[in-house]
Amino acid sequence: MKNIVILISGSGSNMGAILHAAEQERWAERLNVRVAAVISNKADAQGLALAQSQGVATAVLDHKAFASREAFDAALMVQIDQFSPSLVVLAGFMRILTPGFVAHYAGRLLNIHPSLLPAFPGLNTHQRAIDAGCKFAGATVHQVTADLDHGPILAQAVVPVLAGDTAAMLAARVLTQEHLIYPRAVAQFLRTQNT
Image 1 (cartoon, rainbow, N blue to C red):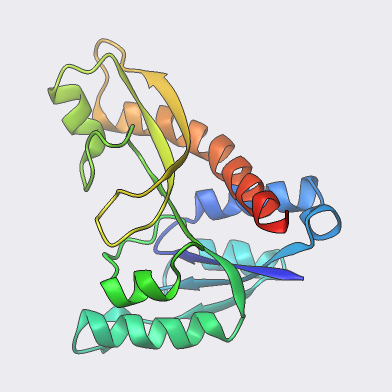
Image 2 (image 1 turned 120 degrees about the vertical axis):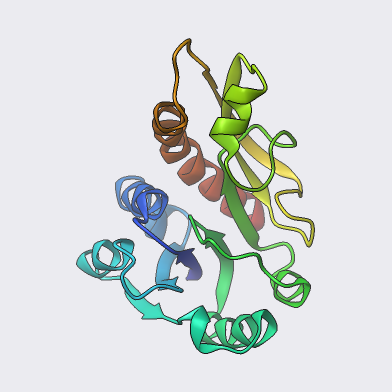
């Protein structure tokens, strides 16, 4: 059985979409894959309760308890590696990862970003798209590299930017698409690993 470890910092809505897809599409039987653990850097992350309700192991590792980003990432790797992951999925994990962490999981680390990369890496993507006069926005699933919000693109979804959109309105429209493309991209990535 191949294990997925999902990292979250908040509500875990993308994690929830992946858990739902794994159950509905019977990933365990069809892909020999399971979500083995959900780990958060915040004890109050709402997604932890959702994962626990689905019988998924959870853990919290507070980044504020570490003197440096490198120390936190080293401890996080120890936590993740207990589950022997075939894939590590960032689902709203709001930490910039060190090059050492990224190298450790090279080729098996995915992220979803709320823009049509390579446009608008980093934060405040929705407001930046509106301010730039974009007619379209969206989300991108990509492999993680040492460069922030870069790496091979696995999937994208496009939504229109409507007249009068606020960043919150656009974010909500993009999020519905994230919930569709992320589970599909994860499953497809794992299928290609199986061949």
